[in-house]
Length: 317
Image 1: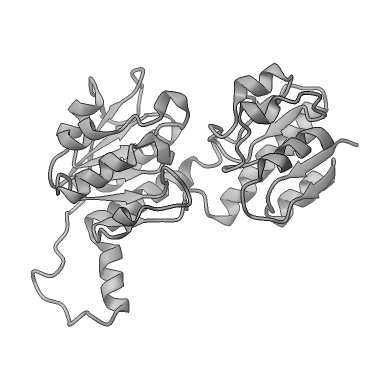
Image 2 (image 1 turned 90 degrees about the vertical axis):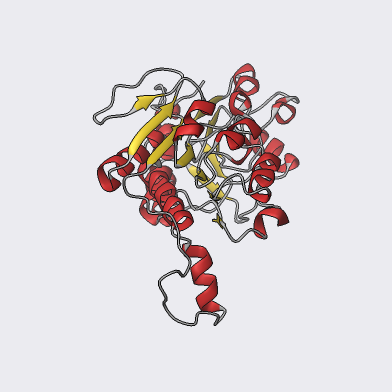
């Protein structure tokens, strides 16, 4: 029976499903693995189920002689794994696309609404006992219905966000993407991010992480945005040059931001914490029990297929 290592605790049904097919060991810490732990996992187990924060970079694979033949990543994003280095060692990498799409899109809409309607700021006021009652000009925000959303990255998640905005809020949709998309609603592809930023009331980052998108969004985009517009990030923290966002907020170039991810997670800069017009969530994108179970079951399916001698359904290399 193949030995499988889970780098974090997962929902009980996922562990039970894995134990039906494998000899499973579950690491009980919720913190990212340290380099020595990752090297040991590669040496001691046939398969490893890692997740965000477990940085399997090229240096982790250098020693060679790995028993591990599959990294079944828990999550759609796998920029924490050097896929080329894994392939060079004969290690397959898989991920869990699809299961996270709707949940992540829901968080994007949550951030859009919370930012535009100043919900976080309002809750802090109430909890602090500073609310003195309703009046006509209190905490005026931006009405979201009928506005224009600009989506950077029109993959599964970008399209799910766009549908919610279009069908749910009657919003116009513009986007930038490497290729034109055939969609079941009206949407206009823009020439570049700067053109998108100039035309949108909400700019939403929905691209995958990785070297190709590192600091994709920076000063030029924020300078082009409308002064009343909001920036939303549900992709990966390092897609955004955080210092450029902080500068834009500090200079009042944009109305605010809603963030679920950060460039150096879990560290959140004091400069972001100090802005009342920034909504900050602790990477809640897929934090629903049924979603995490679905992600786990997809990872287990990848493990089963691989060790049964079949091609895993979600191989990325």
